[in-house]
Length: 185
Image 1 (spheres, one colour):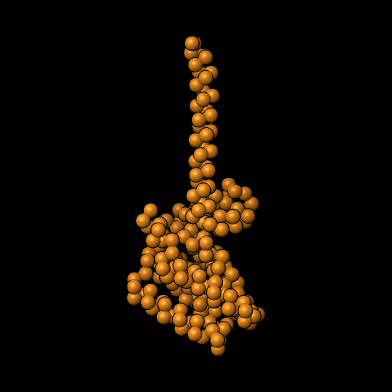
Image 2: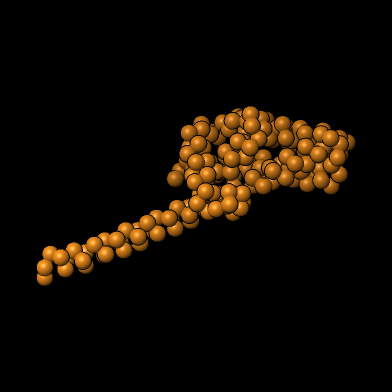
């Protein structure tokens, strides 16, 4: 067999193998992002307008998150936060708007103590989405009601829902959520 014939066979085979390898890599990366971000994956695809842009955004979130010093809480801090949450819940019956605002402040404080930057809400959501993609919508919903509450425009049922939403993220952050799994990986 001539060199030209061998090259005519080898080059297409190498190209096909490279294309297959790239497709497997892309599918693997996509699966990883879907599993890690949960519902946040589809939300980001919708917001970004394309799967490629969304996946780039989610990968950037992962890199930023990996650079943060996210840490578990010491037992005494965990106990204090549990007591503080019980106090916030206890104020709901008499002062539901105050309770929701206090819940927002408590969740923000817990985030800060765990190592999340808390200055900017959008960045907070992006940072939290990496380990808490399945509960981040709870935080969004609660925060929206809190904004209404500050203008005295939230109904009691909305306020009750906000407390439930805050509690979902609070519990996950308090118990270290996905961080313990990530640290072992």
